[in-house]
Length: 46
Image 1 (spheres, rainbow, N blue to C red):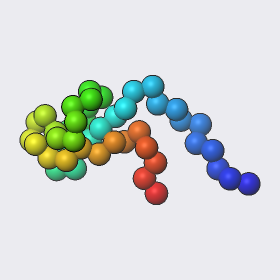
Image 2 (image 1 turned 90 degrees about the horizontal axis):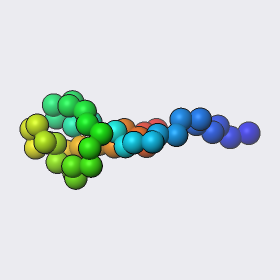
Image 3 (image 1 turned 90 degrees about the vertical axis):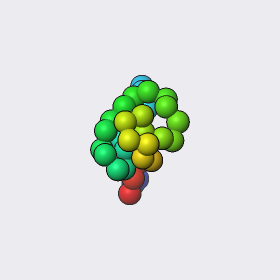
Image 4 (image 1 turned 180 degrees about the vertical axis):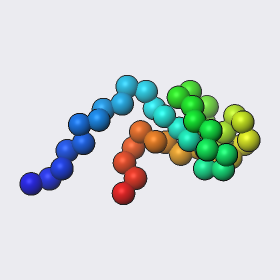
């Protein structure tokens, strides 16, 4: 039997891989604080 994640986000959450700042705004691929790369936290990372 497979596992189903019950979490269903209503907003996308992003975290900068450099400074670890978080945002829910759709700002593209660049962190508004430091210019680093944003990672979407709303998707599974296995």
